[in-house]
Image (cartoon, rainbow, N blue to C red):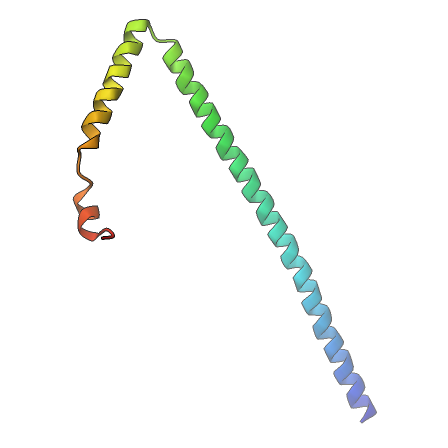
Length: 96
């Protein structure tokens, strides 16, 4: 009887030890995931800033007439795009 209690007790200790070990590993994985998400967000933000900087530079190096023409074209395309219907499949199968 006494040996059986020792075996059960040791078995319980092993189970508790393994579960504690796995919980620590899970915490490390969560921290690593958060760190990767932050890095991804920072990379995305830097890319957007670079894109905006490039867009401004592109406008700046154009002549005055070209900038005016680009501005008019942008307004015209925006105006024409407003009245355009959505893609027919989206209208058929989209949310109602």
